[in-house]
Image (cartoon, rainbow, N blue to C red):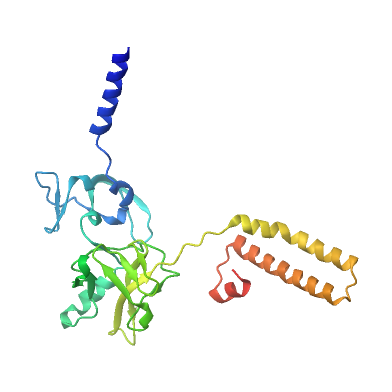
Amino acid sequence: MILYNFNLIFILILFKFTTPIQSDFTKDCPFIYTVDLTDTPLLPNGSYLYHNDTLIPPEFVRDYNYTILINDKTSKNVQTHKRGCICAVKQCLPFCSDDLEMFYEQYKSNCVDYGFQKNVTFSGGIVKSKHLLKDFHLIYGNVCNIENGYMLSPELEQHNEWTLYEDSMLLRQHDHRNLTIKEYCFDIEILNDKYQFIINPIVCGETIVIPWFKIWAMAFSIPFLILTMICYCYMQRFEDAKCKCFVTYLSFVTMSYTLICFYTISGIDLSSVPCQIYGM
């Protein structure tokens, strides 16, 4: 019996170490980080040679039976095909839209550098000039929320300087914060006319999580605040200065709680100025 249990444990341990472990890219490599390998040459060792310059090993390849449309991010069922996680083997760079590539195709005949060459810092502090469209694999499709984001434009504001590293990490200089490719994307900023523009990263806007328990707590406290004001006016003489100040304070608190609860629960989108006035 003891020998049987020992053999069973040995088999389980052997099975654990001989079972192939699923690559992390299936979890950490979203669809936009993959490329279609349908027409890509397959090498004898199972690797794919993408665009004749990037080797994608078999552990970064899997079958997909769907595709995701860039514009509306909806999923569409398609015939099963191979896709490879190219960002695991090549430096990827997120672009907010495909306007950069369109601008480059339009102006490259003028033989003028419109900012497509950017300095990239490598290990050891070595800085090399790299072309945004030629030396990186481009990721499109609003990789993050840019509606509330802002562009780092050192040409316009000195404190907006940034550093791009070889692993696509972006350093925001003014607070020394490192941003991953999920937290920024490159875009164009038009200057005086259509022939003058700069290319810089946009820092993604933060996703605001609404603390619903606080909102409902405010809503629940509103009738009690009103009752408190009524009781206080009956119990005390309203001509008293302290009473007037206290009731006035409670009335403003009640009003602000009501506005915050109303606009948050209703989902009405407000501009930044009303939000600041209401304290939201």
